[in-house]
Amino acid sequence: MLEALNQFHFIRPLWIIGFITIPFIWYFSRKTSAMNNDWNKVINPEFLQHLTPKQSNQKTTRPTILVCFLLSLIFLSLAGPSWKQKPTPVLQSGDDLVIILDLSLSILATDVTPDRLTKAKQKLQDLLNYRKEGNTALIAFSGDAHVVTPLTDDIQTILANMKALDPFIMPVIGSRPDKAVLLALDLFSQSNSQKPRIVMITDGVENDQSEKIFNALDDYPRRISLSILAIGTKEGGPIAIPGQGYLKDGGQVILPKTDFKALENLAKKTGGISRAITLDDSDLKSININNSNAQLNSSKRNSEDNQRFFDTWEDMGFILLLLIVPLALFAQRKNILLALLLCVIYPSEESYAFEWQDLWKTKDQQAADLLNQGEIEKAAETFESTQHKAYSLYKSGQYEQAAKLFEQESDINSLYNQANSLAMQQKFTEAIEKYDQALAQSPNHVDSIYNKQIVEKLLEQQKQEQQNQDQQQNQDQ
Image (cartoon, rainbow, N blue to C red):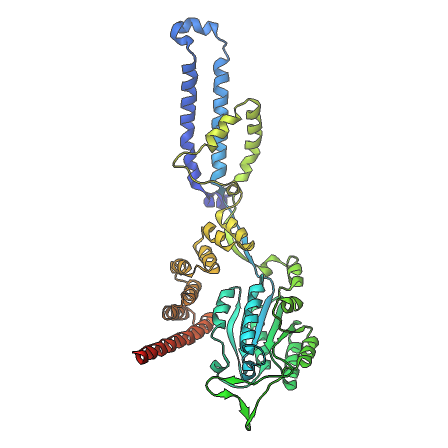
């Protein structure tokens, strides 16, 4: 009880200002009543009291008292009395999906227009936009595998990192999809994923690699399916190397072919589905990208397993409704409810905006609902919490405003998110500085390490493009 008293406060304390109006209402009500009694002007007061009913003053006073008392209760309720906190869900994380992208040299084959890599990136972008909820990671492989983006619900970061992916940025030439699968399993273990899945975008997997992949998935403690989006054609096509023509072996042009049957067998053995990439979303629907089963089961799990929470003060103003409702009904019978409503609703020039749902939920709770409904921009406008407002601005693509809000905090998450916001504005140098500040606080912060590496490559690419432009201008001059 003592703890509750210590924590007691008003969520919307500005409504307490409304109590200032109550003495004025009382004063003007009494003054109006006195002015309306014109008999005082022509009849002696001592004689008048014998001519008027004794209860008339009481009848005039009672409605005024009732109105003032009801207003007091309403202002208290609107102020939002609170003395305890409760966890409020912000986002449902759903299932965890790792996307593996093949960056071996065969992905440059031109048997599809313009080439397999471009088509694979287009399908990857469609896949990310098609995702409705859950965390997603991106892994690229050639002769080795690397995490491009760890598990995150920030699709925009993955899309930004995807643009720089190319077989020639990979340190080792080759094709080792088994290493990418092992890396995906490691991500699932670190995040304690409840419903992990893998989707691989590739043009082929060798038989020995298929066995390694199946054994790795079979040894994992939890069942994980591998679905495949296959790209290429059965006939194959030449591999175009920029500035060097087509890739050859012993003078013969190499024509890598896609073995759709082998990919289908691999996916089937792991409980997944293999589909050839299509122009529409039918391939994504067939491999169940949004995992409807996971969404159905998520409501049955413990909420702490599939939701993120932040603590908010619980608005207890609704308790006063137990007094307000019966008194309001009584006032309606006495025909004074209209006056009460006019007192509450009639706006002055200095009044504050008020909405019906403000009675029951705080602005942060309302914003969380909007965020769950996908109305990100409205959520960003509604959030009062700086961190959640910044997150919503980032999700809606307002990176400059998000960076300014993240800058107000100096913890590692704020520095990391500020760096991401700067990177999305192509302010790569400033972004790297923020990643360094985050790593100074936590040297093993995996997200900062990976994102910094990507941004450094983008910065190098940006400088190279600028040098090329300068050289071209000099030649033109």
